Length: 170
Image (cartoon, rainbow, N blue to C red; front, top):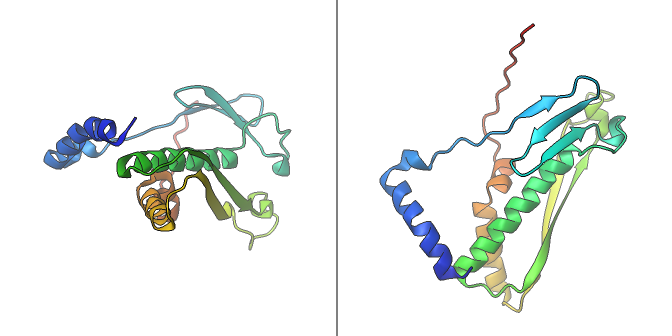
């Protein structure tokens, strides 16, 4: 896909969202099923069923996906797609590359061992390794726009209001 193809696909959407801003607000959802026997939640991703379980650092076997890794996977996927879309839109010469994310967790918090230990990532590092001959100012532009438009990056950087509800039935 080139810049003209991307603009052609996105132009009617942009026009629609400008004319009817409410049409741009879409609710995404995810659903999981709790396993009756194991400490596992099966999540339908839309493309595959993923069974998430405990990380080995919390007593898991490692046989199931770790939700912390899945969060990093979502960041890598979103940042990678966003970078490719931005590169396409601005005519950035990108021959290839890779995206990686790593995050630091203190499992004492998750296991309730130390009240001062945070539950969740205390730091996440996102990195791109680009195959390009573009000058640094263009790389900086690509980086700035990718950070600005990456949904997962922005959600982590500026967390939304988060609520929890429980409904029980017998």
